[in-house]
Length: 188
Figure 1 (tube, rainbow, N blue to C red):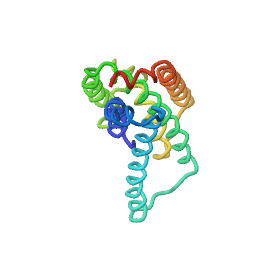
Figure 2: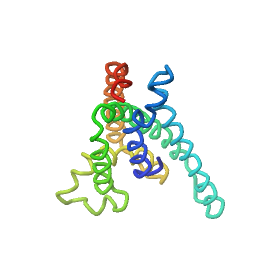
Figure 3: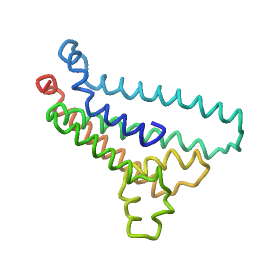
């Protein structure tokens, strides 16, 4: 989850989590959220393994550390809330309608190219495409983690947007969970 590629992989895995765990869902009477939390925890552990590379790079090429870098932690928490809520909602949607999974994969690939990862924000600043940065929630969520780590300022608008995204997606995910959790076993 260090980049949008990892976020996309988590969302892709989250969209198929209930289908992939169908045998366990039918056999073991456990809450469905357990499967989503296990998937999120596995991806956070993979992210932690990637952090070892950052520590090794710091040992070889030290750079100045600042207290503002700790703002990446609440940004990461907001990102995790979005991933949890969207994995529950997308997982239930894909369990009910199996064909949507391939559309999600294509959509995530499209969003990857619309997010400033392989291109910079300066490339579209002042053009007609600048609205894509503000309309793309992945750009905001990525900036909440990336900007503090690069010692760049994150404005209050991004924190507010990220928090709103997390709340909205969590409410949608919890609403889907509350309403459809008993039906998922029949959809599999």
